[in-house]
Image (spheres, one colour):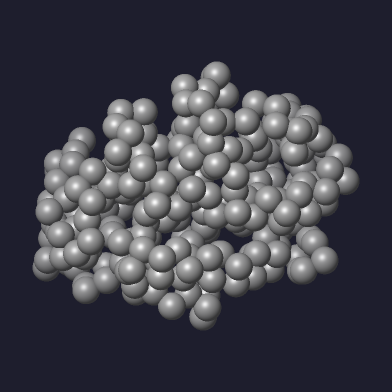
Length: 253
């Protein structure tokens, strides 16, 4: 199976733990986006990204530095949001990371599609950003079907036609196009609350990372085996599930 996850706004910019790394597949496209972004002022970024003046100034500096390698580290180390707390990449052993390098992909507004060990620089450019380019008014226009076709190619190389979507709607929208020829399984994680199970964003994000870790550690190839996921107290609920939408529920914390 192939797995996709979202990136994270929160970054870990401490010195890299791992040496070396691989090159992202869409670096030429990343540079095209960086050129557009370098033409924006701090005020432009404030409006475009709905961020504070301080964050806008930081990202002006980041876009100016892109391509020079400053602060670069592997994507699996750079991202530090809720999904990555669930993934716990630092505790994956080398063989598990090797498997993840082949089977896990990170969707990115700036880089398009990343492998865990791909080297990236600090940045912020969410997929939903309405950054106008010569391809259209949004990043979805910019990436077009490139991400979907790359996922098809990766899956074909792995000999699978199944993609487990552990990404957010914002990011998976960039891949979920007519060009994507894979069976997509999208797990749902819920908390058992008064009135019935509910999705709580913080917990769901962390659970999506934990599901990616579960697949990696068990080297899963059979979609039926996803039902065995029980990290963090989640249990498969067949009564709430559909064939490509398995639902997992746990008692509320």
